[in-house]
Image 1 (cartoon, rainbow, N blue to C red):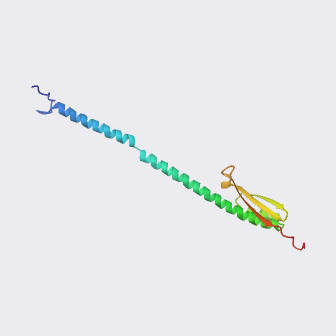
Image 2: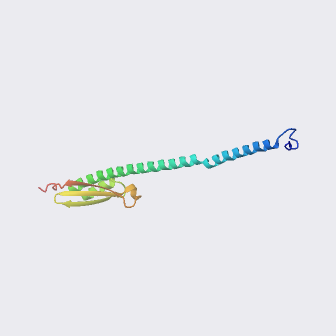
Image 3: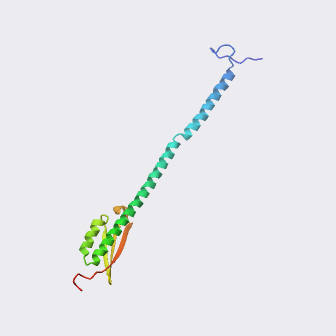
Length: 150
């Protein structure tokens, strides 16, 4: 029967084959653990960053929609006041009312058909930040007879 060689300084009776197998198993286990750790490293951070970006985008869209609704309401108020003033024969007052009530950069269009005056107020959405998107409101008022005109 042959005896396994003994490593110098390892002491009597140390089996080199068993020691080598144990060391190889430890190395394989470390490599497997390292592979799992390396492949998953940073995935939670990436997922969190993507979720945060999506939440910011949704919040921006909601705030933009709310801003468009507010601009629409201001245009409707300005159009109503402008139609009333223009129906009374005061187009300069109508323009002043639009300048005071509507969002900055709003345009007023007045039209009269028979006994009705229609005022349309329009402005670029988000102060013109979205090209091609216009918020408009129209209001119609009956023309009033000039005072003292009988």
